[in-house]
Image (cartoon, rainbow, N blue to C red; front, side):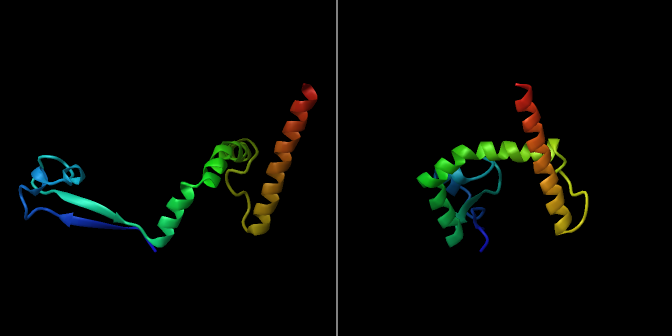
Length: 113
């Protein structure tokens, strides 16, 4: 289910935004028309928000930068940025070659030390 946006138009109520407790939600102060938006979250979105506030998510988020750095290396330095052939088998071969290239680079670097 998609996230929906509920917009309430306050154009009929000229002075409402000036005195309302929801004044912070009005857009463009001083404009002739003003609106207030409220997000209606689906069950899936609420579950995701609950998961994002959990300790498990926070621990995994701390480790994510390591994985993203490796993915970036494969994409930019090892030829995994764009598909060089079509089909799933071609992508598997290209992925294996990118990982092989990264490992060879790591071995060479360790041998130099």
